[in-house]
Amino acid sequence: MSYIDGFVIAVPTANREKFIGHAGTLDAVFLEFGATRVVECWGDDVPEGKLTDFRRAVQAKQDETVVFSWIEWPDKATRDAGMEKVMKDPRMDVANEMPFDGKRMIFGGFVPVVNLPG
Image 1 (cartoon, helix red, strand yellow):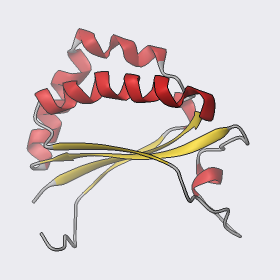
Image 2 (tube, one colour):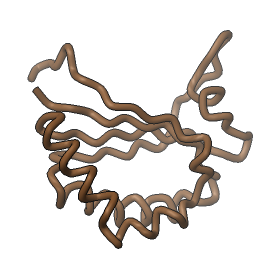
Image 3 (cartoon, rainbow, N blue to C red):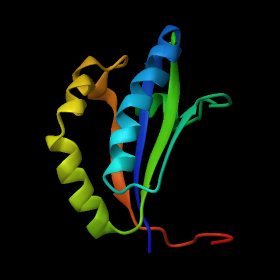
Image 4 (spheres, rainbow, N blue to C red):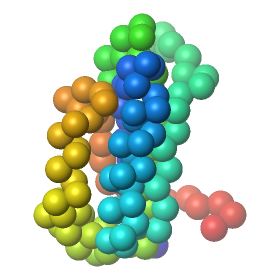
């Protein structure tokens, strides 16, 4: 069964193109080390909720857009081995130049329980 790393971040809307370039550089490293798919989604219809929502979760400001991303791996073992290589790769040094506030990033690893049409 596949394994998913999921992320939610707030990116200054003015940094959209910088974010896309930054993600493209880093995402290639994940793919090289075993990820089967990387998806970066720019918020388009992200409503404010009554109790919680994506914007609150990452403390998005008025001039920021919520980005929802995930990395798909064949399985957790491949993810663990791949992430170890990713973290040691010198190309990841550009991660320090994020065009967003990484302290407000939400992330986690997930095991799919429903996968349609799968």
